[in-house]
Image 1 (cartoon, rainbow, N blue to C red):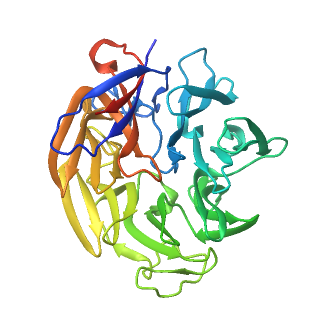
Image 2: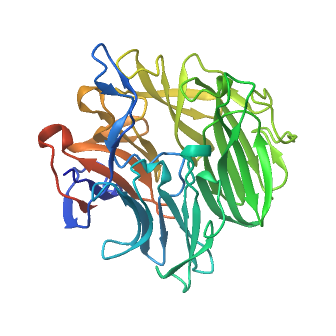
Length: 400
Protein backbone atom coordinates (compact mmCIF):
# COMPACT_ATOMS: atom_id res chain seq x y z
CA UNK A 1 0.00 0.00 0.00
CA UNK A 2 1.41 3.37 -0.95
CA UNK A 3 1.00 6.33 1.33
CA UNK A 4 1.49 9.96 0.43
CA UNK A 5 2.41 13.13 2.29
CA UNK A 6 0.52 16.37 1.81
CA UNK A 7 2.47 19.41 3.02
CA UNK A 8 1.48 22.90 4.04
CA UNK A 9 4.72 24.81 3.64
CA UNK A 10 5.36 28.23 5.11
CA UNK A 11 8.17 29.66 3.04
CA UNK A 12 8.44 33.03 4.70
CA UNK A 13 11.34 31.90 6.88
CA UNK A 14 13.94 32.63 4.20
CA UNK A 15 17.46 31.67 5.12
CA UNK A 16 16.38 29.00 7.58
CA UNK A 17 15.98 25.29 7.04
CA UNK A 18 12.61 23.61 6.76
CA UNK A 19 11.48 22.86 10.31
CA UNK A 20 8.67 20.41 9.66
CA UNK A 21 6.03 19.71 12.30
CA UNK A 22 4.04 16.66 11.26
CA UNK A 23 0.35 16.08 11.78
CA UNK A 24 -1.27 12.99 10.32
CA UNK A 25 -4.15 13.49 7.87
CA UNK A 26 -4.82 10.70 5.39
CA UNK A 27 -3.69 8.64 2.47
CA UNK A 28 -3.58 10.23 -0.94
CA UNK A 29 -3.07 9.30 -4.57
CA UNK A 30 -0.10 7.72 -6.29
CA UNK A 31 -0.45 7.23 -10.03
CA UNK A 32 1.64 6.31 -13.06
CA UNK A 33 0.34 7.07 -16.52
CA UNK A 34 0.53 3.81 -18.53
CA UNK A 35 2.93 5.13 -21.18
CA UNK A 36 6.47 3.75 -20.93
CA UNK A 37 9.85 4.75 -22.33
CA UNK A 38 13.48 3.75 -22.18
CA UNK A 39 15.34 0.83 -23.70
CA UNK A 40 13.46 -1.64 -21.51
CA UNK A 41 10.18 0.31 -21.59
CA UNK A 42 10.24 0.51 -17.80
CA UNK A 43 10.13 4.28 -17.23
CA UNK A 44 6.65 5.82 -17.19
CA UNK A 45 6.03 9.15 -18.88
CA UNK A 46 5.32 10.44 -15.40
CA UNK A 47 4.72 8.73 -12.10
CA UNK A 48 4.29 10.47 -8.78
CA UNK A 49 2.36 11.10 -5.64
CA UNK A 50 -0.54 13.44 -6.09
CA UNK A 51 -0.48 13.93 -9.86
CA UNK A 52 -2.42 17.10 -9.26
CA UNK A 53 -2.03 18.77 -12.65
CA UNK A 54 -0.83 22.37 -12.63
CA UNK A 55 -3.77 23.20 -14.91
CA UNK A 56 -6.30 22.60 -12.10
CA UNK A 57 -6.56 25.95 -10.28
CA UNK A 58 -6.80 26.50 -7.33
CA UNK A 59 -5.97 23.40 -5.36
CA UNK A 60 -6.02 25.36 -2.10
CA UNK A 61 -7.61 28.62 -0.98
CA UNK A 62 -7.30 30.68 2.20
CA UNK A 63 -10.35 32.41 3.69
CA UNK A 64 -10.95 33.72 7.25
CA UNK A 65 -7.53 32.35 8.19
CA UNK A 66 -8.55 28.80 7.20
CA UNK A 67 -6.96 26.80 4.40
CA UNK A 68 -9.46 24.97 2.20
CA UNK A 69 -7.89 22.29 0.04
CA UNK A 70 -8.75 19.22 -2.01
CA UNK A 71 -6.97 15.90 -2.44
CA UNK A 72 -7.70 12.42 -3.72
CA UNK A 73 -7.10 8.80 -2.76
CA UNK A 74 -6.86 5.94 -5.26
CA UNK A 75 -5.11 3.47 -2.93
CA UNK A 76 -8.12 2.03 -1.08
CA UNK A 77 -10.09 -0.45 -3.16
CA UNK A 78 -9.73 0.31 -6.87
CA UNK A 79 -12.07 3.30 -6.63
CA UNK A 80 -11.21 7.00 -6.72
CA UNK A 81 -12.13 9.19 -3.73
CA UNK A 82 -12.13 12.99 -3.77
CA UNK A 83 -12.00 14.91 -0.49
CA UNK A 84 -12.37 18.55 0.52
CA UNK A 85 -10.70 19.66 3.72
CA UNK A 86 -10.45 22.70 5.98
CA UNK A 87 -7.02 23.04 7.54
CA UNK A 88 -5.85 19.67 8.87
CA UNK A 89 -8.75 18.72 11.12
CA UNK A 90 -11.91 18.63 8.99
CA UNK A 91 -12.47 16.67 5.80
CA UNK A 92 -15.42 15.36 3.82
CA UNK A 93 -15.78 12.93 0.95
CA UNK A 94 -17.27 14.91 -1.95
CA UNK A 95 -17.20 12.38 -4.79
CA UNK A 96 -16.31 8.78 -5.65
CA UNK A 97 -15.59 7.29 -9.08
CA UNK A 98 -15.78 3.51 -9.16
CA UNK A 99 -13.09 1.46 -10.93
CA UNK A 100 -11.03 4.56 -11.61
CA UNK A 101 -7.53 5.70 -10.62
CA UNK A 102 -6.62 8.63 -12.93
CA UNK A 103 -6.23 11.84 -10.85
CA UNK A 104 -6.95 14.06 -13.85
CA UNK A 105 -10.45 13.90 -12.34
CA UNK A 106 -9.37 15.57 -9.12
CA UNK A 107 -11.01 18.80 -8.00
CA UNK A 108 -10.37 22.48 -7.42
CA UNK A 109 -11.72 24.53 -4.54
CA UNK A 110 -12.39 28.20 -3.95
CA UNK A 111 -14.35 30.41 -1.59
CA UNK A 112 -16.63 33.11 -2.95
CA UNK A 113 -16.78 36.52 -1.31
CA UNK A 114 -20.12 35.40 0.14
CA UNK A 115 -18.31 32.60 1.98
CA UNK A 116 -19.88 29.85 -0.12
CA UNK A 117 -17.31 27.15 -0.85
CA UNK A 118 -17.30 25.69 -4.36
CA UNK A 119 -15.66 22.40 -5.37
CA UNK A 120 -15.32 21.64 -9.07
CA UNK A 121 -14.56 18.01 -9.90
CA UNK A 122 -12.82 17.90 -13.27
CA UNK A 123 -14.28 16.19 -16.29
CA UNK A 124 -12.02 13.85 -18.24
CA UNK A 125 -11.94 12.52 -21.79
CA UNK A 126 -14.65 11.81 -24.30
CA UNK A 127 -16.85 9.01 -25.59
CA UNK A 128 -16.09 5.63 -23.96
CA UNK A 129 -13.44 7.18 -21.67
CA UNK A 130 -15.61 10.07 -20.52
CA UNK A 131 -15.96 11.01 -16.86
CA UNK A 132 -18.40 13.81 -16.11
CA UNK A 133 -17.36 16.69 -13.91
CA UNK A 134 -19.41 17.95 -10.98
CA UNK A 135 -19.81 21.26 -9.17
CA UNK A 136 -20.61 21.28 -5.47
CA UNK A 137 -21.56 24.27 -3.33
CA UNK A 138 -21.62 24.55 0.45
CA UNK A 139 -25.04 25.14 1.99
CA UNK A 140 -23.53 27.39 4.64
CA UNK A 141 -20.76 30.03 4.38
CA UNK A 142 -17.27 28.69 5.07
CA UNK A 143 -18.53 25.18 5.79
CA UNK A 144 -18.01 21.82 4.06
CA UNK A 145 -21.72 20.90 3.89
CA UNK A 146 -21.91 20.40 0.13
CA UNK A 147 -24.74 19.83 -2.32
CA UNK A 148 -24.38 19.16 -6.03
CA UNK A 149 -25.41 22.06 -8.32
CA UNK A 150 -24.11 20.85 -11.70
CA UNK A 151 -23.20 17.48 -13.23
CA UNK A 152 -25.68 15.74 -10.93
CA UNK A 153 -28.29 14.54 -13.41
CA UNK A 154 -26.55 16.02 -16.43
CA UNK A 155 -23.04 15.77 -17.91
CA UNK A 156 -20.44 18.41 -17.15
CA UNK A 157 -17.67 18.67 -19.77
CA UNK A 158 -15.37 21.09 -17.95
CA UNK A 159 -11.91 19.48 -17.85
CA UNK A 160 -8.86 21.18 -16.28
CA UNK A 161 -11.07 23.68 -14.38
CA UNK A 162 -9.70 27.07 -13.32
CA UNK A 163 -12.09 29.02 -11.14
CA UNK A 164 -11.85 32.67 -10.07
CA UNK A 165 -14.23 34.94 -8.16
CA UNK A 166 -13.86 38.07 -10.30
CA UNK A 167 -15.48 41.50 -10.44
CA UNK A 168 -17.68 40.20 -13.28
CA UNK A 169 -18.74 37.05 -11.43
CA UNK A 170 -17.53 33.49 -11.07
CA UNK A 171 -15.21 32.89 -14.02
CA UNK A 172 -14.69 29.23 -14.91
CA UNK A 173 -11.94 28.55 -17.41
CA UNK A 174 -11.82 25.00 -18.71
CA UNK A 175 -10.73 22.64 -21.45
CA UNK A 176 -13.44 21.12 -23.62
CA UNK A 177 -12.70 17.90 -25.48
CA UNK A 178 -14.00 17.89 -29.04
CA UNK A 179 -13.92 15.27 -31.78
CA UNK A 180 -11.80 16.32 -34.76
CA UNK A 181 -12.06 13.78 -37.56
CA UNK A 182 -9.68 15.76 -39.77
CA UNK A 183 -6.65 15.05 -37.60
CA UNK A 184 -5.29 11.50 -37.75
CA UNK A 185 -8.71 9.84 -37.60
CA UNK A 186 -11.16 10.58 -34.81
CA UNK A 187 -9.37 11.85 -31.70
CA UNK A 188 -9.91 14.05 -28.70
CA UNK A 189 -9.06 17.70 -29.36
CA UNK A 190 -8.48 19.95 -26.35
CA UNK A 191 -9.95 23.44 -26.81
CA UNK A 192 -9.89 26.36 -24.36
CA UNK A 193 -13.21 27.81 -23.21
CA UNK A 194 -14.61 29.80 -20.30
CA UNK A 195 -18.00 30.28 -18.69
CA UNK A 196 -19.44 33.31 -16.91
CA UNK A 197 -23.06 33.33 -15.74
CA UNK A 198 -23.88 30.37 -18.01
CA UNK A 199 -22.43 32.18 -21.03
CA UNK A 200 -19.90 29.88 -22.71
CA UNK A 201 -17.23 31.35 -24.99
CA UNK A 202 -14.44 29.59 -26.89
CA UNK A 203 -11.11 31.30 -26.29
CA UNK A 204 -8.75 29.53 -28.68
CA UNK A 205 -9.11 27.11 -31.56
CA UNK A 206 -7.08 23.91 -31.50
CA UNK A 207 -5.37 22.17 -28.61
CA UNK A 208 -3.72 23.88 -25.66
CA UNK A 209 -2.83 23.75 -21.96
CA UNK A 210 -3.17 26.85 -19.80
CA UNK A 211 -2.58 28.44 -16.39
CA UNK A 212 -4.34 31.54 -15.08
CA UNK A 213 -4.25 34.12 -12.29
CA UNK A 214 -6.61 36.88 -11.15
CA UNK A 215 -5.11 40.00 -9.63
CA UNK A 216 -6.19 43.62 -9.34
CA UNK A 217 -9.33 43.24 -11.42
CA UNK A 218 -7.52 41.54 -14.32
CA UNK A 219 -7.54 37.87 -15.27
CA UNK A 220 -4.33 36.70 -16.96
CA UNK A 221 -4.14 33.47 -18.94
CA UNK A 222 -0.99 31.89 -20.37
CA UNK A 223 -1.18 28.92 -22.70
CA UNK A 224 0.89 26.82 -25.09
CA UNK A 225 0.09 25.27 -28.47
CA UNK A 226 -0.47 21.56 -29.08
CA UNK A 227 0.62 21.09 -32.67
CA UNK A 228 -1.95 18.95 -34.52
CA UNK A 229 -3.67 18.51 -31.17
CA UNK A 230 -0.93 16.20 -29.87
CA UNK A 231 -0.28 16.67 -26.11
CA UNK A 232 3.37 15.66 -26.49
CA UNK A 233 3.96 18.31 -29.15
CA UNK A 234 3.45 21.36 -26.94
CA UNK A 235 5.32 24.50 -28.00
CA UNK A 236 5.40 28.30 -27.65
CA UNK A 237 4.01 30.60 -25.00
CA UNK A 238 0.99 32.88 -25.36
CA UNK A 239 -0.52 35.47 -22.99
CA UNK A 240 -3.96 37.12 -22.98
CA UNK A 241 -5.96 39.06 -20.37
CA UNK A 242 -9.40 40.49 -19.61
CA UNK A 243 -10.84 43.05 -17.20
CA UNK A 244 -14.53 42.30 -17.82
CA UNK A 245 -14.79 38.64 -18.88
CA UNK A 246 -15.92 39.64 -22.36
CA UNK A 247 -13.19 41.65 -24.05
CA UNK A 248 -9.71 40.16 -24.25
CA UNK A 249 -6.40 41.81 -25.15
CA UNK A 250 -2.80 40.77 -25.59
CA UNK A 251 -0.02 41.85 -23.23
CA UNK A 252 0.17 45.23 -24.98
CA UNK A 253 -3.59 45.84 -24.58
CA UNK A 254 -4.35 45.21 -28.25
CA UNK A 255 -7.95 43.92 -28.62
CA UNK A 256 -8.31 40.31 -29.73
CA UNK A 257 -11.09 38.60 -31.68
CA UNK A 258 -12.31 35.29 -30.25
CA UNK A 259 -11.78 32.49 -30.77
CA UNK A 260 -8.09 33.04 -31.38
CA UNK A 261 -6.33 31.04 -34.03
CA UNK A 262 -4.36 27.99 -32.87
CA UNK A 263 -1.16 29.95 -33.46
CA UNK A 264 -2.12 33.61 -33.04
CA UNK A 265 0.89 35.89 -33.35
CA UNK A 266 -0.98 38.69 -31.57
CA UNK A 267 -0.98 36.62 -28.36
CA UNK A 268 2.46 35.02 -28.87
CA UNK A 269 5.06 36.10 -26.32
CA UNK A 270 7.72 33.41 -26.77
CA UNK A 271 8.43 31.23 -29.78
CA UNK A 272 10.11 28.25 -28.20
CA UNK A 273 12.93 26.06 -29.44
CA UNK A 274 11.69 23.09 -27.43
CA UNK A 275 8.59 21.75 -25.71
CA UNK A 276 6.80 23.96 -23.16
CA UNK A 277 5.42 22.57 -19.88
CA UNK A 278 3.48 25.25 -18.00
CA UNK A 279 3.79 25.42 -14.21
CA UNK A 280 2.35 28.68 -12.84
CA UNK A 281 1.63 32.37 -13.44
CA UNK A 282 1.62 35.33 -11.07
CA UNK A 283 1.60 39.13 -10.99
CA UNK A 284 4.50 40.50 -8.95
CA UNK A 285 6.40 43.41 -10.50
CA UNK A 286 4.69 42.49 -13.75
CA UNK A 287 3.33 39.26 -15.15
CA UNK A 288 5.59 36.25 -14.56
CA UNK A 289 5.15 32.80 -16.06
CA UNK A 290 6.95 29.72 -14.78
CA UNK A 291 7.57 26.86 -17.21
CA UNK A 292 9.93 24.08 -18.20
CA UNK A 293 11.44 24.03 -21.68
CA UNK A 294 12.49 20.57 -22.81
CA UNK A 295 14.25 19.04 -25.79
CA UNK A 296 12.25 15.79 -25.60
CA UNK A 297 8.91 14.53 -24.28
CA UNK A 298 10.58 11.17 -23.54
CA UNK A 299 11.69 11.33 -19.86
CA UNK A 300 14.72 9.13 -20.60
CA UNK A 301 16.07 11.47 -23.29
CA UNK A 302 17.04 15.09 -23.73
CA UNK A 303 17.53 17.97 -21.32
CA UNK A 304 15.15 20.40 -19.65
CA UNK A 305 15.39 23.76 -17.89
CA UNK A 306 12.98 25.58 -15.57
CA UNK A 307 12.52 29.13 -16.85
CA UNK A 308 10.63 32.30 -16.03
CA UNK A 309 9.12 34.67 -18.57
CA UNK A 310 8.96 38.24 -17.30
CA UNK A 311 8.13 41.18 -19.56
CA UNK A 312 9.62 39.66 -22.68
CA UNK A 313 12.71 38.17 -21.05
CA UNK A 314 13.31 34.50 -20.23
CA UNK A 315 15.44 33.73 -17.19
CA UNK A 316 16.81 30.21 -16.70
CA UNK A 317 16.38 29.15 -13.08
CA UNK A 318 17.58 25.57 -12.87
CA UNK A 319 18.07 22.39 -14.79
CA UNK A 320 15.50 19.74 -13.91
CA UNK A 321 15.33 16.01 -14.53
CA UNK A 322 11.70 15.70 -15.60
CA UNK A 323 9.18 17.56 -17.75
CA UNK A 324 6.41 17.05 -15.18
CA UNK A 325 8.32 18.25 -12.12
CA UNK A 326 6.22 20.89 -10.42
CA UNK A 327 6.77 24.59 -9.90
CA UNK A 328 4.82 27.34 -8.17
CA UNK A 329 5.03 30.97 -7.14
CA UNK A 330 4.63 31.36 -3.39
CA UNK A 331 4.79 34.97 -2.33
CA UNK A 332 7.77 36.45 -4.12
CA UNK A 333 9.56 33.09 -4.19
CA UNK A 334 9.57 30.04 -6.42
CA UNK A 335 9.18 26.44 -5.27
CA UNK A 336 10.09 23.61 -7.63
CA UNK A 337 10.67 19.86 -7.34
CA UNK A 338 13.65 18.14 -8.92
CA UNK A 339 16.03 15.16 -8.92
CA UNK A 340 13.51 12.36 -8.50
CA UNK A 341 14.90 8.82 -8.70
CA UNK A 342 15.10 6.88 -11.99
CA UNK A 343 13.98 9.88 -14.05
CA UNK A 344 10.54 9.60 -12.46
CA UNK A 345 8.57 12.67 -11.51
CA UNK A 346 9.33 14.76 -8.44
CA UNK A 347 12.18 14.79 -5.96
CA UNK A 348 13.49 17.43 -3.57
CA UNK A 349 11.53 20.58 -2.73
CA UNK A 350 13.73 23.54 -3.65
CA UNK A 351 13.09 27.17 -2.71
CA UNK A 352 14.41 29.95 -4.94
CA UNK A 353 14.54 33.64 -4.11
CA UNK A 354 15.59 36.04 -6.87
CA UNK A 355 16.37 32.93 -8.96
CA UNK A 356 18.94 31.73 -6.41
CA UNK A 357 18.51 28.48 -4.49
CA UNK A 358 18.30 29.19 -0.78
CA UNK A 359 16.65 26.10 0.70
CA UNK A 360 16.27 22.42 -0.19
CA UNK A 361 14.29 19.63 1.47
CA UNK A 362 15.33 16.09 0.52
CA UNK A 363 13.28 14.10 3.00
CA UNK A 364 10.99 12.50 0.41
CA UNK A 365 10.07 12.23 -3.24
CA UNK A 366 7.77 15.24 -3.67
CA UNK A 367 5.77 16.77 -6.49
CA UNK A 368 2.82 18.95 -7.42
CA UNK A 369 3.70 21.86 -5.19
CA UNK A 370 0.84 24.38 -5.45
CA UNK A 371 0.32 27.79 -3.90
CA UNK A 372 -2.57 28.55 -1.57
CA UNK A 373 -4.60 31.33 -3.19
CA UNK A 374 -4.94 34.47 -1.02
CA UNK A 375 -1.97 33.44 1.09
CA UNK A 376 1.48 34.96 0.71
CA UNK A 377 3.55 32.15 2.20
CA UNK A 378 1.75 28.81 2.04
CA UNK A 379 1.56 25.96 -0.42
CA UNK A 380 0.40 22.37 -0.72
CA UNK A 381 2.51 19.55 -2.10
CA UNK A 382 2.35 15.76 -2.27
CA UNK A 383 5.25 13.54 -1.21
CA UNK A 384 6.08 9.88 -0.72
CA UNK A 385 8.96 7.55 -0.05
CA UNK A 386 7.96 5.17 -2.83
CA UNK A 387 11.43 5.12 -4.36
CA UNK A 388 13.02 4.48 -0.97
CA UNK A 389 11.01 1.77 0.76
CA UNK A 390 7.61 1.62 -0.93
CA UNK A 391 5.85 3.09 2.09
CA UNK A 392 5.44 6.34 3.96
CA UNK A 393 2.99 8.17 6.17
CA UNK A 394 0.61 10.91 5.19
CA UNK A 395 0.97 14.28 6.87
CA UNK A 396 0.29 17.94 6.72
CA UNK A 397 3.52 19.70 7.55
CA UNK A 398 3.92 23.22 8.85
CA UNK A 399 7.20 25.08 8.72
CA UNK A 400 8.10 27.19 11.74
